[in-house]
Image (cartoon, rainbow, N blue to C red):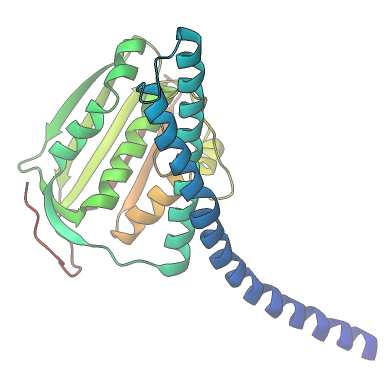
Length: 259
């Protein structure tokens, strides 16, 4: 009896210590990622950029091809590290949103421009269907831009070649919805849920466009905006990723940025 009580107390103390250590480990992990990984990778990318541009002399076709592959790999690693840092910071610090008014249509069009090469290579066309009165909404424009990029990139990465993606913008009861509908393989509800979990990471091949900040963080950002994520898959090979947020925020506005 005494031994059992002693054992339970020891286990409880160990659990408390482990929880404390876990928080410290998270902070240390972010610092290591930032200073020991992110900074060196960024330096490598800058040097490789200069080499590819011929700043250190003319390159042969083979040399240029190998350097471009290395640069692509470094950019991929940089994106992964940046995603992890953003995710841990959001989880640890609970950052405040920096609200402003902005044109969400412009944000979507800018995101599409970044995928121009991918769209051409895969013969994918995009149709925007705006069922809205006004494209000006409120929110953290920097974070929502990343959300839009990530949902767009993920939708395109799984879309069939020679298909059409539809982007729906809807407004109802002071709620604003953005949905990316693509023609792609069916995803079971369980796999769809796992896409948005922190401990499940879906890596993409280097020939895919970047997936931005990661779906777990996307979900956190939308929740912070008092919204919800939309993730649906149909057996007729139609997938929808998107989000719904209040059109007018109730948080503090730090600046006005109507564009």
